[in-house]
Length: 273
Ligand SMILES: [Fe+2]
Ligand SMILES: [Fe+2]
Image (cartoon, rainbow, N blue to C red):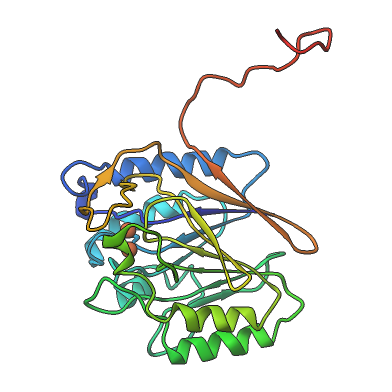
């Protein structure tokens, strides 16, 4: 099974550029084209928040037809730039959001890997929190599927990356989330967004990653008090490959055209010198 992670698409009303210069609609279209054309076929797409830039209905209206172009089933959770209530309205017919008052989580149980999307958005603030009610829900859901290999995705990462202006906006109850995930060894991975960079770590034995962005990247600046800026690095997405019973491998994939592929070996089987 292949799972593509698209994150932080930051769509603007009318498809206009984000921050005056990023063609987020065009770059998302290119990423979707790449995912659609991938061989073998991608089986599911997860979108880990910041789908729009301000969470307005007008932005979700622009985004929806772009997401409808994805051939695989797709699932989305809110980030700090989203509004959970607007996302339920815009995508509720496609994404199976749970019936909960405080959080727009989703549970997808019909793939070889069970997918659980968490809502870490908190209205009006940039940082994230899963919250006690959602953590209790997650614990119950995981307890009910101990034999189902599981990928959890959430917008805000539960760890410090070294990029200070992003770290102050990370997941405030990350330790509590990792404690729940640790109790359920069928959880293979926690996939996050928010930082617009490919970052990996292991927290208390739980593999955690942040996906890169198919549009703008947060600048890799690990200095104390570094400014909040972005850089147009090569667009990238994360691609997870699952092999039963429980191997989940993460690849970085680069939508776009590059020189190659070129052979290593010539027609006689010799390594090209
Ligand atoms: Fe973002
Ligand atoms: Fe974010």
